[in-house]
Every structure is written in C-alpha cells, then in structure tokens.
Length: 195
Image 1 (spheres, rainbow, N blue to C red):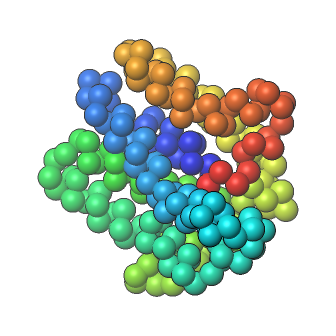
Image 2 (cartoon, one colour):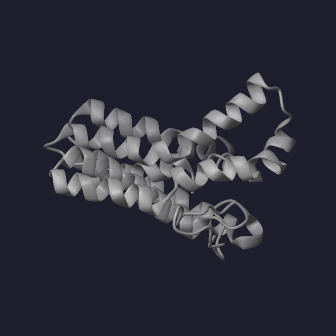
Image 3 (cartoon, rainbow, N blue to C red):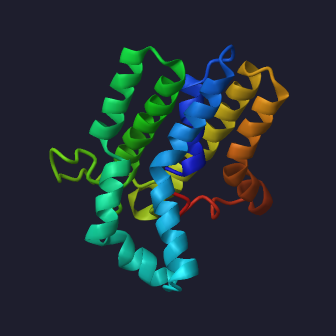
C-alpha cells in the first residue's frame, strides 16, 4: 500500500478531534515504517548514483535492506510500542504506535514479491500475500482502484471530522500524492512504487 494511504488510515482510526496532537502522531506513525526505505533509496540513487533498476532489482531485495525492513515493519516492534502506549495511557503515543502497527498489517496483506519479515526477531518467515498493491499479476490494478477510493473516502471523513482548517489542509496535503496524479492523468500510474 502507498505511504499516504497508510497515513490516512492511521489518522482515520486514531486521530481525535479534541486532541490535535493525535492527528500528527497518527500521520507520523503511518509514515515512519517507510522512512528508512525512502532514505536508503534516496541515498543509493542520489548520493551513491546507483541506477534505479539496480536499486529496485538487487539492493531492495538484498539481505541488508531486508534486515532494515524487518525492523521497521515488525509486528512485535510496533506491538510492543503500542502496548507501552496503552500502559502509559498516552493518547498521542497510542495514535503513533497504532498507526505504525496498522501500516505493518496493511503491508502484510498487500505485498507479494516485496513482502517483509514482519515477525522478526522471533521468526524470519515471510507471508507472500496473494494480493500486491502494485503488481497487476496479483490484482495490483484492481487494488489501485480500491486504494484511490479508500483515500477519497478517508480524506472526506477526516475533513468532515476535523474542524480546524490547518488539520484539514494537512489531510489534503497527505492525500495529494495519491489523488493529484489520478486527477491529472486519469490513470493509476502515479500510485505504484510509492511505498
């Protein structure tokens, strides 16, 4: 699933209108699992000047990169953080950790060839979903339509629920990378490969 979608799902579930910090925390929790991947891709392509086909064909699937993805998408890592947030009775930390855990769960269900070891450090087992959020061979084209619809619905829900214009603007800014390319091109080309 694309990163902005993860962020909006987390915000829809965990943001509380009377607690503005929970919106930021939920959006951040949906983003953080993909930050290491973005940093590694940017470093490889912009600094190390590795060709993109090598980054996505070899490096992305290397043991070193996959070890990072096992941590940042780990159910046990995010679950422990969420348990700590509940124990501390912190709404903000709960929004962050809950959104991160939802991100990992959504990726568990929508990644096939690029699946992660989400039960690390207990197990290196990888679930290869029958659905890929991007690969048409595994319903990626159908899922892309679903994802756009989901983003529209979540954006509308959040803008309705959140009353402050800054919060609504933030939600629209998060949704924009999904919706603007679809509106401009009339297709789903901009969705694939965003995380």
